[in-house]
Image (cartoon, rainbow, N blue to C red; front, side, top):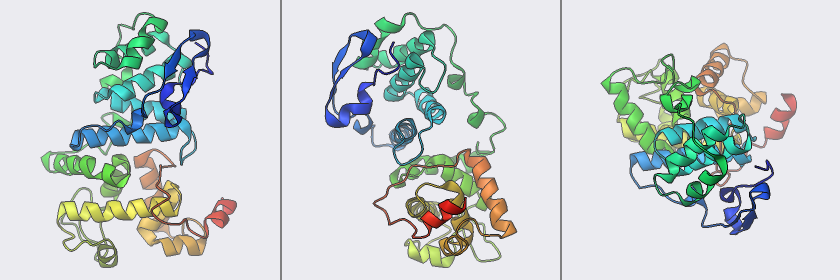
Length: 306
């Protein structure tokens, strides 16, 4: 298969006809697969959020292109049963797009999606041969960001409730559940009643000014607190154009301090916090919605200083 063959879902925004090189296959693109809304429940919202995140990293939409990360996120969606993610990952393996080319593994993912009635996957099966008999590692839950050492895996029923709520709410704000959980782990260790010596409150440790800014009247109510923290993260992601280190620094020390120092402030606490969030999130960039707010006026100077 030609590595230059562009899959339909990458071009359907234009309703394009796609000719797939050596395949000799012409596909009339249907409406954008990404926009094919999943069911409006918590699981559906999570699948849609994962799909959006993976597409952003695969095509460099709002973040630097990162095929390896796209493959990891697609695989998480595939494991959770998203046929679009299964197809996209099959396509990456069939083309060696950020992963080692493996037609048998591509066939495995196409077969998964085809069983759910995914038409493009059904068509692609004839080009990649028989699927491997071995379950891909990420479907067995052994990828690095989901192994037993992952501190974001909930410990106990109370934490599972919080994780479920994050998975439900984070997609509404365009925030990766993993980033939100990283902040929660670092801020409160999943304790909805936590209070700091600076009067930061609840799961995401909102100070009173931040609570007021994002309309949180009950900071110890888990859902209200999460919504306030997610709204703040969404704003910071747009303000710092998806730079997770700057977002983390601002969440800890305030965006004013980040602007003033033109980067992560030289506070030991903040620098340690940034390292903690980056290690938990395991990524330096995050998709963002530029419509939320204008970027920081200091961002060009911050980038120059890096």
